[in-house]
Length: 509
Ligand code: MN
Image (tube, rainbow, N blue to C red; front, side):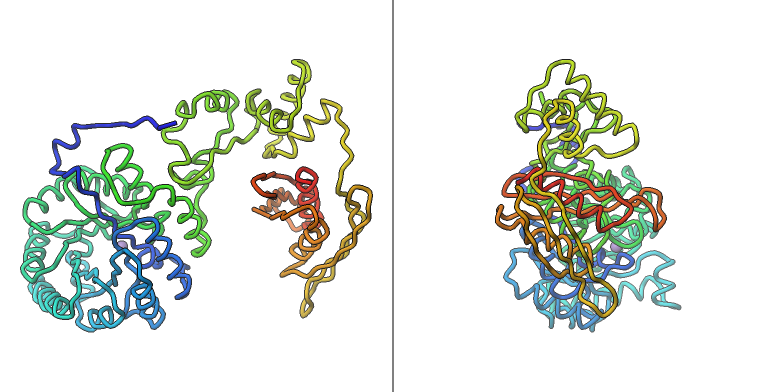
């Protein structure tokens, strides 16, 4: 079903926006995003990210700073040679050597930045004034043009600089044949209204495209970026998941979805690739996406409340502004203390069970009871509850008879298991990167005859926090299209993991 579209035509009358054109996106995940504290990507990882960004449909990939390190240089070189559709850009200061490194790496363009506020000019060029910045800007842009580069010229810390100076600086850059001009809110102090006003002014002054670069220090990066477009900006800077220095940059997924769905302004982003790209960035940067983050957070399309789930099943637009499939995701229904009949009936249907009204009441009560204890109610819990109530005493197909593990320092973690599968004993051994991995590998080997069973996700919570705490392991296993969630809870992390995997296997086999 199509999502409801919030068209607001009045926005278009104010801005000189050509509906036939799309807003250009410069993705700076590999430059500003990589400046996130603790993030450092290898050349291979950067190439993976660039390839994913190209598939996502970004117009410009800012791939790093060619002069910064050998790794950055090599990454820009490899990305430039990868035959991607996007324009490949290197960050540069107003220094000829920065330009030479970018050109030598094979970049198509430079995002060349000059300090524009008093604070930045004083700290970067002590004793120099605004005229010096203008002179250097012109000289270095001319050099970049001689080297055959597209020049996107940016005023760093523009939002704390004098707008008259920005215009003077941009005028000099434009006369020196810069191709695009970027207004950078380097420390994230813009507000939407001011952004729109400034953009309108800049767009009226210059013929070349104006871009915006926003940071999220006050949580306004997305709003400011959208308002910049409203004010006439033709290009926006963003990072996947909003990673970047300090509180990060404008999040690509938020800006794109807001522009397209709330303002009906087009980008070239292939929206169904948003989620995959987001997860790739999460994995490589190890910056975990907050669960409640718009568009890409785990909970963005997850519903728990009973009232909500029944309404969602009838019509997803009741409680979702867009359907998750648009961004390459699937809706998740989680049962908890608000668990309603509809979600349980959905699981019953999948299992092929039927319950009387009395049994249904009892199932609901038991599921709520688990939820009230603050636990996540997994498919396995619900199945166990349903089967208990329906008195379906199913003999477990896979049972653990024995498990031994050898682990330590200077020893390969090794596990041997004895399972009873449909009454037959099965012995297997395997190694792993750690004891849990070894145990699970051994079990996977033992059940390999039942098809390709994969561990989709593995999550551990220590309930009380100590090393003696109850460990709650939640796993997702898959076999073909079928995915099940199961849990194991023990004080021993290995046993809890094994228990969870066996629980899941019993649902799959
Ligand atoms: Mn920045």
